[in-house]
Length: 239
Image (cartoon, rainbow, N blue to C red; front, side, top):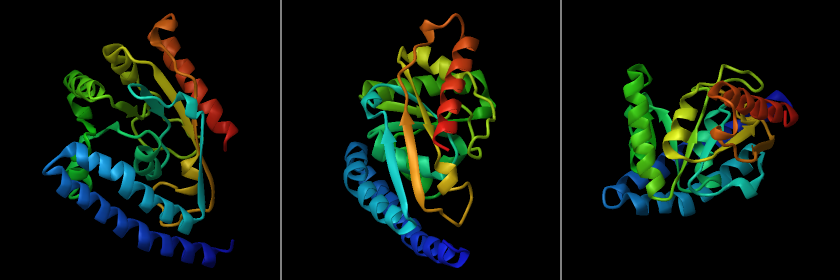
């Protein structure tokens, strides 16, 4: 596809997606005034499927989910983070999941308010140990409601096949919740690059890998090395 066609296709997709997203998020904020559970159900089962089915069609992006047998409630999903795409689309793949996200994002009008209604878990990374305890307490509440937790171990987005270092907070979360960790590899950055106007047609893959237990390893360092190895090795295969 030449540059002009790619630009026009992305423009058409963007003109639909971002206004539709704002309408969808605004709707769950309004519904959330009366019931957060109904707002979550409405987003997961009505707004999200419609918005993304149309948007992905316009962009020419196909999504393939591998390892669906590993997607279950009350688990921790350790996901690679390459793009805004996964933050938008995960609620359609792992329904009723709650993300661990930067507290600053909750201050964004409409977007941030919708995250609060949805029950996302904000973390102030400047608060150190206090932030970790707060994250665990909020995560426990979500799990008690039958929800799963999605966390990005690197704590920030990175380019496809780039590694910025896996942080051990996920071990603290797994031990505190006594839940397995499901690694997730992906290639979203290839087709929906960070801060890019252009979206590139093709196949986006989310690959869920077998669950891991921290207790199966000699120590936390060994576990983190294996977690990183599994995710990064799989990312290379789906590049």
